[in-house]
Length: 409
Ligand SMILES: Cc1cc2nc3c(=O)[nH]c(=O)nc-3n(C[C@H](O)[C@H](O)[C@H](O)COP(=O)(O)OP(=O)(O)OC[C@H]3O[C@@H](n4cnc5c(N)ncnc54)[C@H](O)[C@@H]3O)c2cc1C
Image 1 (cartoon, rainbow, N blue to C red):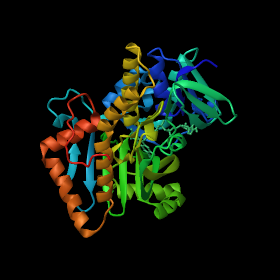
Image 2 (image 1 turned 120 degrees about the horizontal axis):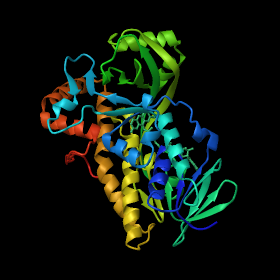
Image 3 (image 1 turned 90 degrees about the vertical axis):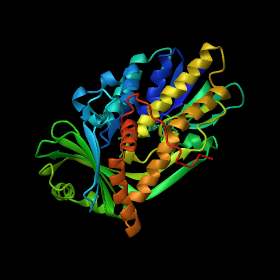
Image 4 (image 1 turned 180 degrees about the vertical axis):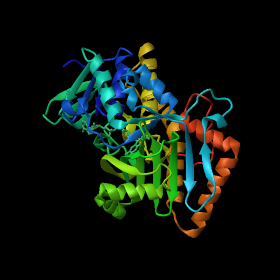
């Protein structure tokens, strides 16, 4: 087979977005995915509802993904409230608190399976000489001796490309295969996600409720439904998974102080281990990481796929720059530039999110005091509140990062 410009490992939402982005720039791309194509075409519901920023919406629009989402499944987030059990103070994030912004909401919520399906359909529409999809075969090894990378598949066949991009999840086997270490933080907790139908009309606000021992996020979806995200210690998650639908409905209703009335479980509940991952390098020889393989976020600040899309945008930009100037699209200068930009966009938020999670899951008395005070301060100090809001929405207004966090070594 002819040498491809780029070979992408993994047809998840990041890998497919990367493929669409590069093919739209005129590059030849092969995507290799270990799942069967029938799964990509009709991904199962996985319980995740993904909060997306304005910038992500714009990227998805430019890739032909956004228009393929079932619009009835796209919910808008009108505001966000962060609460702490036992405290009258809360952090209230509303778009109108930002006088320089023209938007009326904070972002969007879309089921993950819809994003995966829309990304598959967008890629499928580009399939042809420039985009080839190989499914039902995993990548087992990568070899990058000099001017080319050679990838070996499970069936023994090999493919050559100028650059290999791995988008094969936060537990990326190809990252390990290329000898790239990663910071990994296991929170010793699990997140359980499910949909609930509620009795009373909602206000379109996303609630993050930090309770002693557990965290509850209630995210507004359409048609009087909310996406419920519970973070619990791993031993407690089995108990929640075993509850009858009625018991679970009553439990969530009680934890949410009956604000939306009776809660009724819709569909299945799903559980995920909470492990945050940050690759120490985003590249090796003729090899780059995107999506969760580069940065696997804790979901509490809802940045994971947003960062995936930002990485797709930055890497495409650097590859395109090299191509236009007749340079090597898989060369070190391209990959270094991508790493510099993507680190700048993600490292502070990754570290800050982990610190926040650590504090808000620490129930010892000193931490309890800090937890309460922090929300109070964040709500009252307008520049800080504006900075948090701008990060959540990423609508193009300036976002200068504070120099408070440790640098990546
Ligand atoms: C509960 C929860 C809530 C979340 N909420 C948000 C949110 O609100 N906002 C947000 O932005 N993000 C959120 N995220 C994060 C988001 O879901 C992920 O960032 C995103 O799905 C990662 O996409 P990906 O393509 O990088 O990886 P994945 O979706 O993991 O896809 C990886 C693909 O690679 C394939 N693969 C693996 N190994 C191989 C191999 N050897 N060969 C070939 N193929 C291979 C896999 O089969 C898979 O298809 C949330 C995550 C969770 C768990």
